[in-house]
Length: 175
Image 1 (cartoon, rainbow, N blue to C red):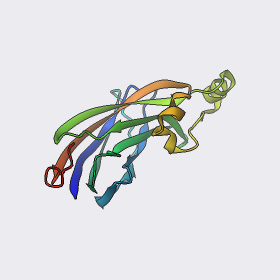
Image 2 (image 1 turned 180 degrees about the horizontal axis):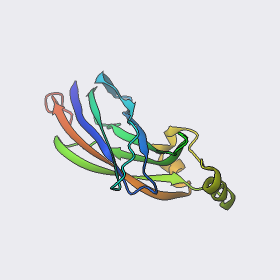
Image 3 (image 1 turned 45 degrees about the horizontal axis):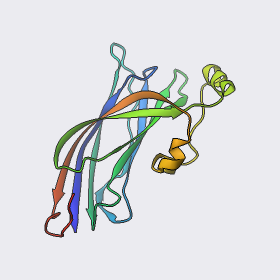
Image 4 (image 1 turned 135 degrees about the vertical axis):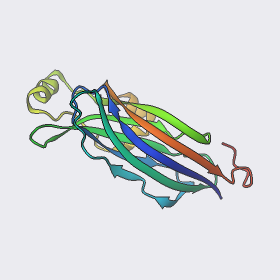
């Protein structure tokens, strides 16, 4: 089988309304893909930078897949949260990006967004926190459902990934 090894890190996030951020991440691959080693989901620590607009996480990613075809190429998704001074966590954004298909080192910025509710929801969110969230993360991957959402742009998550491809030609898989 052809193999893909993804090594890198979730560097951090920038351009969010407030600092004190952390994120949950996960890698989603199609049914043709088999996880050989590594962890396909995780959570960073909270970073509250005082002097700059970039939350550093430096959270490692090391995942190894085997596949019979490129259909369902892995994607990584993010849920970025803001933690207030009382320890409450508020969703600040969702983001999805494809793992690069070419071998080598890649620096990626994954732009995030969050659902926007009614004017009453926004009023309540301003004073109480919280806000609309997706019922299922499957909506991140399904285009038709996602296109019907009303959203607003949030910040970006920075990734540094190294992609190693093995045995793609030998098994007739073209990336």
